[in-house]
Amino acid sequence: MAWSDLPAELALQIASHNVNEMQTLRTMCLVSKSMRDAAIEPLFSVLHFSRNVDLLCWLALAQRAPSLLSAVRKLKLTIGLSLSATNLSAIPTLENVCELELSGLGRKNAPELQWSEGLEAIASYLEQSLPNLRRLSLSNSHFWHLAQLSRVIRAAASLESLAICASSVISLNNSNQDVTNIGRVPVNLAGLRELALIGNHREFDSDGQNSLGRMMLLSPPTQLRVLTLLSFHESGYDNPCSIMTMIMLMRTSYAFLTHLTIDPNLRHRYENPLLTSALPTLPPFAALLELTIHLGALGSADSSGPAAFFFAALKPMPKLTIVRFVLRELGTWDYTSFMWLFSSHPSLLHENSLQRRFPSLEAIHWVFCVDPRGDKVRLMVSKSHKLDIERRLLLRLENVGMSSQWICREWIMWQDRNYRPMVWED
Image (tube, rainbow, N blue to C red; front, side, top):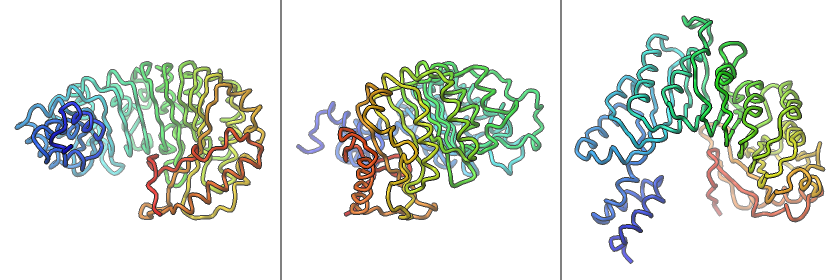
């Protein structure tokens, strides 16, 4: 059957399924009018503005076809020299947008007054033009003080999901903000269902009043279902937040948490035992279904140790069905074997230990995340290399005494640095 002969309902399903495949949607638009009508809404469901010219072109298009305003579901804004925050007021109300990705907020070398004006423009836009916003992501952003961060979060009144990645709070010494007011602006986080903190600057969650933990203590996210706490190990951005905030988040969300993703390999060695020793004091994660632990870099015994101690310190979880261990493949080929894997706690992988601690466990997944060193390095992983690493891993699991029911090549997965499935080359 030719594409032009497809029933409208089927064409709509195909377009919705390929919402992130721009080339497929463009091809559908060229086939026939009916196919174009089916593809036009998914094609414009995600908008990304990084330059003022992008914004102007889309506004001109929306004037000719006002129905496009209702098609937008997700908005991406990269604020910077090419897209000014003060120009956002030109974007009309987008009632169906439920997700917003903001990056590039603030520049370290920008005057505080100029930054504050831009931030207020962003916050006002969120309040007035995105009434149904539910998911907010902030990345590569710099705030003069925590009150500015809370201003952006407060602008999304019905927030259910919040992600903060590679962001920082500039030193108070450079700010004119009254220290006594920092962190005291009320932020309602009680309705959050998902929270992700990933590789933020060490000043992002410092001690004292200018801390993320202090802001969250005023309105703890007690209803979290999904919590992600990950680190960056090879840049100026490291831990997701302070160790005290990590502990506080796990303590306040234990009752409803179903998915926990964590990297226990903290930047400073003295922090690792502090995190592990705090686990026995926390209530058990009785509702947890999936647990993902990052073990560190492939072949690095030093980075896998804290993760093994963290796993050992966890209390039994009766509903846990999937455990996922993630290793970073840096492309240096500096591995020889997996003898370091759970070398300090091999019994954790034994059948009796797994069944006693996690009676509902169904699968143990091993994920290799291909993350080459350097921004310009493109790592080509051959199929033979993949099979060799998988063979070594399976052999190690046998050697530590893991039951055969948990050793399965189908449970070994390969992903790129954005956690998408790898495409293999023969």
